[in-house]
Length: 414
Image (cartoon, rainbow, N blue to C red; front, side, top):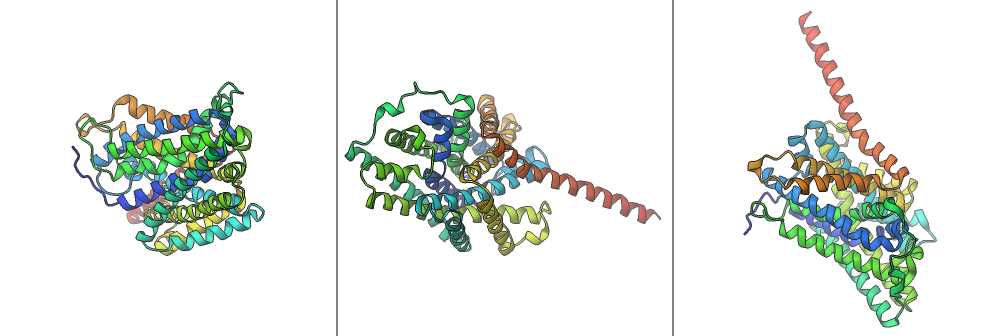
C-alpha cells in the first residue's frame, strides 16, 4: 500500500531519469569498457546496488521533506546550509558535464570525422530545445530512452541473426583490470542510474520500512538494459574494441549490418543525444537559477533566460576543452557527490521519521565515495575542483557577510 508524497517535481525527475538511462547507452559504455574490459558485466550490478541504497534513503527523505529540491533541501535541513549549496552545485556541474558528454557522443556516433565542430552544433540544437516548455522536455527524455532501447534491440537482433557474438569473449579469466578498473567502471555507469534514483523523490511513498517499489523496478530495468548492451557489445567486438569510439554502432556494423543497420543506430544515438542534452541543460539551468537566488552564485545569473544561457555556455566550454571520457567522468563524480549528500542526510533522520536501515544508508554513502574516488585521478581532481568551488564560494560569502555585519555595527555605534 502506498500514499502520495509531494510530487511537484515528478515530470522533471522522470524526464531526467529517462534521458540519462537512454543516452547512457551511447555515452558511458565506451569509457566503462575501457576501464573494466570483460568485467563490465560485474560493474553494472555494483552501480545498481549503490543506486538502490541511495534510492531508499532518498525516498525516506522525500517523505520527511515533501516538495521539490531533492538533496539540496535534504542536505540543507539535515546537514546545514553549506551542504545544501554544495548539493545544488554538484547537480549543476554533473548535468552540465553530462550535456557536454551527450554532444560529444553524438559526434562520435554520427560524424566522428567532424569531431568537436559536430559536438558544438549538437549542443546548440540541444540548448535551443531546452528553451522549450516542460512538456517538450518531458517528451525529449522519453524519446532518448526509446532510442537507447531501440539501439540495444537492433544490436541484439543483428548479432543474433549474423551469429557475430562470441560468448568466449565474455569469460572473466582474462586480465583483471584491478579494483580501480572495475569500481571506476561502476562509477562511470552510475551516471546512467543517477536520474532513476531521483524518481524516488516523486514516487508514491512506500509503507514504513519498505523498499520504494517504483524506483526499484526502474533501477532493475536500467540494470538489465546495460547488462544486455554491455554483454552483447563485448561478445561482438571484444573488450578492447568496445572501449573506444561508438561501440554500439561498431558492433551492429561488425554483425553484418554496416550500412542500413549501423546508420539507423547512429541516427538513434543522435536523436537520443539531442533529447537528453535538452533535458540536462534545462535541469542544470534550474539549479543555477536557484543558486543565484540564494546568492551562492552571482545574482546576475538568476532568471530563466540568464541561467539557461550560462549553462549553455558552460556546456560549450566543456565540449571545447574535455575529451568524451573526461566529460563522462566529471559528470559521474559530481552526481555521485550529489547522492552522497542524500545518503548522509538520510542518516540524520530520526527513528520516528522512517529512517533507512543503517547498512543501507552507509552502503549508499560508502558506495558513492568508493565509486567516485575510483574514477581516473585527473578526472577526480577536475571534478573535485568544480564541486569544491561551491564550498569556497559559500565560505567567502559567509566571511563577507560577517565582515559587513561587523562594519555596520561599528558604524552604528559611532
